[in-house]
Length: 369
Image (tube, rainbow, N blue to C red; front, side, top):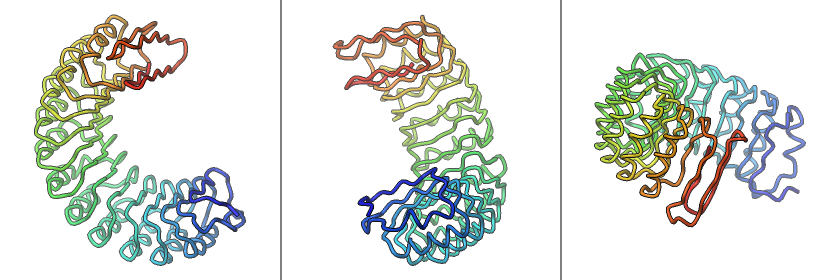
């Protein structure tokens, strides 16, 4: 008998052998990881019987060809289980599978639902979000689902009446309907918003900046949205009026002008963690940051892939012991050697880039180069 509360059977390609591996599971089992196991509708029938016999609260079925029929089988038993966390990422559900699932959510105990990569489209998204006000779901993952304006509008309509605090909309084109979403954000409970790779651009940044100060958002991910210097300025100018402590701005082509605008506002903000990777800020940007970091609350900063040379790194590191920073990412820079003096001056680190990634740790800080 397997004496475990968490059972990880991921990537074992169990297929029709699933029942064999689940037999004799410990009665205390609460978490089940079945990612990438070629589980189809037949496997789902076996799993459905298992779920109703155990007190499983968390299940991960990502990367299995469950399809719409498998989603229907799962939906039929959810109300008879203790499951609260479900991950169905890239499980081939389609719109039909999402509709099946939506009908079961109201009577279930689910609080976290991840449907990334299922191409559920407008129809599937509308079916899921329309029942949110009648569920206990607080996390919803809709990454990479190929939906358009109709779905964005539906999300915007039902979010204010839901319990959602964390929303993942990555890898969907939010260009159409983004303003409607922004307008509704102040009326939601959302504290974590992930809109990486959603093509919102400069206009989206402007729209978002108008409503951010009225929201509860403390963590926002805006990576790879073509914000540019102008878009960053819109966001930067309202940072001090928001509750944001974590902001990811990597791959937005902000350049030195955008960096300077951001640097002026960071000391007035509550930001503790910031990602500025791959933004072409180069030496001038690093020097600018070095001047303001001692006056910020920042403890974690990512400056990787910015083409920073040794001289700029030296300037930057001189300011570190005056800051609260405990994590720095400087990977993939033209750094041949680097000396870091910890805030207490008890440690001296010599790091070389002969290896691709080097990590150094003390009880005070972590450096990645």
